[in-house]
Length: 163
Image (cartoon, rainbow, N blue to C red):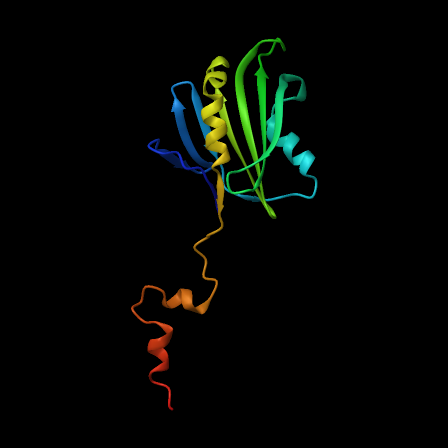
């Protein structure tokens, strides 16, 4: 299962931790797989925004609760990852936190220098609003899946049944 972001002519490079999309030389987006949503959504969101950084090294600039173009709940958070001196931004990030019933995903755009994200913010917000889930897994969910593509259909099986 994955988050689908229609990126147009930009190629997504698939990696172990998800797909990576380059917006320009300074702005990159990581699109991870879907994960089960925890009960504590606020704690999950805080953990995703921190991204392993200490709380003192992240400055949240804006939070927008909105919806995707297809109506899924979406929270956009813009933050600065601060340098070790604690006041100068070394990178600016836009997190898109998606909630798809019991599944979630967090796409992250990161820009170095920070001003590059400000310049791309409108394009990133539009990209994130187009996000939607793909719940397919490739797993067999019904016996019909076993025969799919084998040239036989359910109607073919029935023609050999008596009367």
